[in-house]
Length: 380
Ligand SMILES: Cc1ncc(COP(=O)(O)O)c(C=O)c1O
Image 1 (tube, rainbow, N blue to C red):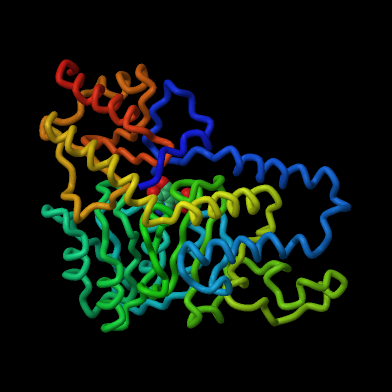
Image 2 (image 1 turned 135 degrees about the vertical axis):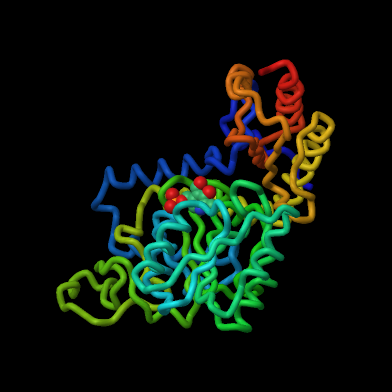
């Protein structure tokens, strides 16, 4: 268990921020790294050609430790949707086949597959919301021979339900189904290993559980797809990019590994150092310990909320860092206003309250939320 890390963040004492699944706050050293990087452009004459490559290489090396793959297998992308669009551009689907997604899947991991299916005479197959909260069993049941691609998250974002990706991946391999993963709501807070799961593609936007800035993320591309088509054709993906004087000697060749899938201007001098600093901190804390520490706080919250009539998925079927509370009688309309007045930040969506703390939260924050839940009895 890790001690509370609030001192690394700029969170006022009267704010109980329990909404990392929406957007994490940046740590002070991450802001410093980003600001230093941004200021570099005040002196562009000091930005030598090698700087276009060194930051990106360091980003790949650091991210590779978090996701457990070779740095060569990572591309730098601006968003989850960019990574998913890259996967959809390269994974084949034939007429009559289907693409598997979850019920209420995040739109960035739904629309590209819908478009791909439409364009190929295929269909989307939606895994029905499992009444018993067991998303893994529901996926395995839906994984019939017609499924060409399973496009899945590690954590279903509106329930907190956790998928057993190792089991699902094994079933996919057995029948030749490609596996494309959106790890945006899990990487950094829930242990994951490319070596164990062996997906075809896996993407994570980094502004949530990677504690990094907005507009940067990573895309894992399995070696078997590294000869594929990138979304963009830009200069820095090409084999001759390191020699600035020969850029117009156009080449068919790409840089090695997954680098061909990098977004344009991937050498972002502000975002890259900030994201590296954030990932270094996560590696220092260690993801299993982060998961366990946040999990303990959520367990406490789930127990207290249950006494007040709120239910949540059973602990063994949900991600430890991600707690969705529901109540049969619904959530009073005045609840968001009550939370705002008390400066307690969670996500209220329909009949669900999504609570996603991180290491900056203490039991004091949890008590403030519990006090708000208690007051729901007096609200209409
Ligand atoms: C599951 C999931 N994937 C992806 C994203 C972000 O997508 P994008 O990077 O395309 O904006 C979110 C944001 O809430 C999310 O919850």
